[in-house]
Amino acid sequence: MSKPEFDIRRDDPSTPDVIELLRDHEAFARRWSFPENMYVLDAGELACDSVCFFAARKRGRLLAVGALRSVADGHVEIKSMHTASGERGRGFGKAMLRHLLAAARERGNHRVSLETGTGEAFLPARTLYLGSGFKVCPPFGDYGISSDSVCMTLDLS
Image (cartoon, rainbow, N blue to C red; front, side):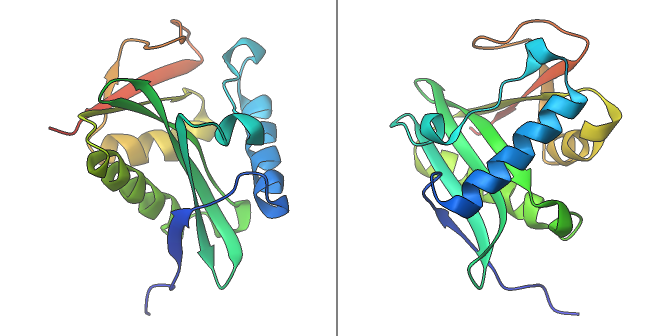
């Protein structure tokens, strides 16, 4: 069986299909996270200059999204990484993560970090990140210590 053909490129977070997927992302986070650990960015926040927003599409159909947000000089954070529910388990999340890491390197960053949930619903994400070399780290930026949240980082150097 051949891999599905799709591409990942910079995209506009305000397009209707992206907004719909971002709403799904927020609903997922709301369902599985404590309210104080909701760190979802909206389309306007994803469109700001400190964020590079990407979408994976196959024949125009939106499959997954992800973004890089500047944290500090040489350090970016993965934000809003989400795969459409009907497309999970097909490698689109893994492809998006590889793309985000390559984009971070191309932009001269030496560190990539992220925050995700600790609950069972977030196990696939944690497994993906840990399998890609991320290590659990202390909270960074505005994140705090919580039993509902875990921060991870990857040294790109």
